[in-house]
Image 1 (spheres, rainbow, N blue to C red):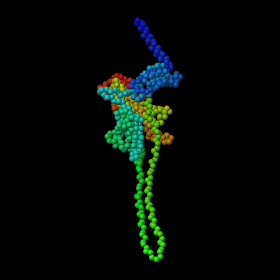
Image 2: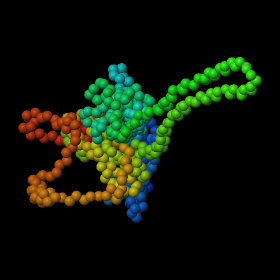
Image 3: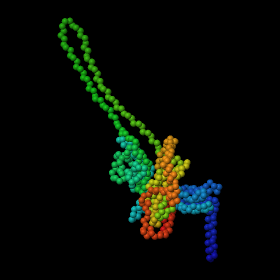
Image 4: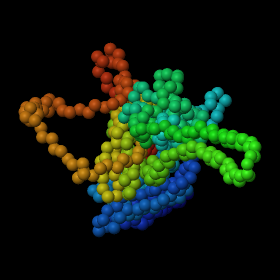
Length: 516
């Protein structure tokens, strides 16, 4: 009996090996193969793009690509690997507040890797008897602004947006290039559903440290503005009020006094004549002529017509022209200063209308048993985006942010780092051949200092010197854990393990710290 059981066991082992061999033989022997199924958790719908890189070599490993929804499968057999591509699976078009989890290990030619993908989305937690969960706010979008002159000779600014979902909404305005400690604002929560607010002398705003709405728009002034919806804010396009506003006037005609007509003169009576002598024929009496009554004509009023209002040029800009293009991070350890990089792209003709101004990074923490309930523990200021690649098809941007994780991290928590792109309208620039260029030559003193600096830089390099980059971080983000006297004097031998990367998409990194 045992012999028969052993034979059956060997039969199953051979069949499994045969199945794996058959699956491997299905792929090109000089290419990398990948297959898997897409699954969704709290996924509302839509397709994601799954692909692998290829090359133009003789092996025919040209790469694969597919648009998939939860429940669908894929089988790629034309993927390439180093030195041509990275040999990794790529997942794109992941919806906002969702992340894709899969085995991120890369392969080599001849391998067949299983890459099941799980789409997980954040949803408001279910209500509990002891606490009320905070719903995840949805930011406003399609921000617009228009500055005009009123008939009173004062400027008026019209702000518009597509409503989102948030418990509060504030309009922030500043005359500076970026928002600092002091700026102007107003609570527009009552206007959030309508998506419109007028700023003028009747509807003023206040300084953020005051409670009195006493500031109206100024003439010929450039402003930056944003909508703060709670956990974050959305920046709008900067604008400038009109250079001059002339109040409109109405000319009333001046009435002339009504002339008084001249009265009709009374005729002189004819005296009575006593006839004497022969009768005489008298000429007939001619009645006096009354002059006609004349009046002074009234002048007519003269009105100056207003010039026609020019037809505005249609605005082709849309914030959706800027697309996220991936995130990277250096080694993530407890107490380490981690450098996060976020990438974005503007494609095709959209590069003429839109550009990525800056990117804001946020760090969230959530319990491992409640992954859909997150608390933001840190956020960067808007970090300027730099152009790192520009060709005829697209422009690629990059922003870097450094964050120091606490030395004593919570190993029962999940951590997420997100990148929010600020897409702004590109301002048309004058051609360089019109403005001209001026080359400024260094002075004699500058040349002398540059000559003396070279040996000093060489000596400094021998002792580990060099340029350093000043990072702009908030005090809470740069805090270093305090050590006791025993910790500083004693020799500490402790193995620090890196964070385990769980999910990665174009605008989100999800990871956890194992037991330290």
